[in-house]
Amino acid sequence: MPDINQAVINRWIKVIAAHWGRKVGNITYIFCSDARILEVNKQYLQHDYFTDIITFDYSSGSVIAGDIFISLDTVADNARQLGIIYTDELNRVLIHGILHLCGQDDKTPETQADMTAKENAALEILQNEIN
Image (cartoon, rainbow, N blue to C red; front, side, top):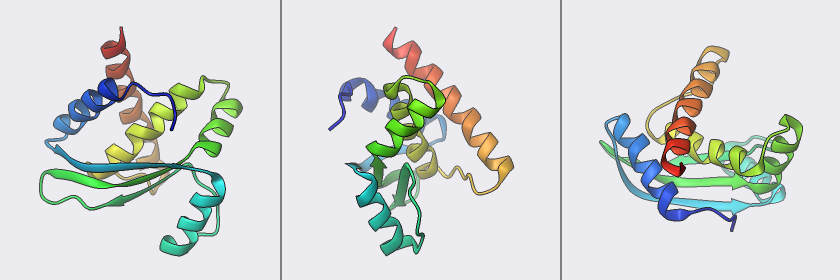
């Protein structure tokens, strides 16, 4: 389990969900290795590659719910490659999954850029919450 302030992260997730007109239901984060996320990717999505996050959406109406697999190995690698703090990259990935549950997409270059902007806005809210 990564060292995160669960109370702060839970409040943050609720704020972001509310921004999109959603309430938070049952969300499970599964922190795992590259090997495990590759296994999940192959088994459920028929994708044979590593990724930092896989979100399974079980939302109903305005209540978001789901299982969010996060590869801590990939998060750490991405943080190193980007030259940023591990916790900052982990927070980006945490909220990325929530944005997916709120209906946000990132399948095209345009929607990827839009998702990054939404992640940045959410991360700014988190910074304000922490400070």
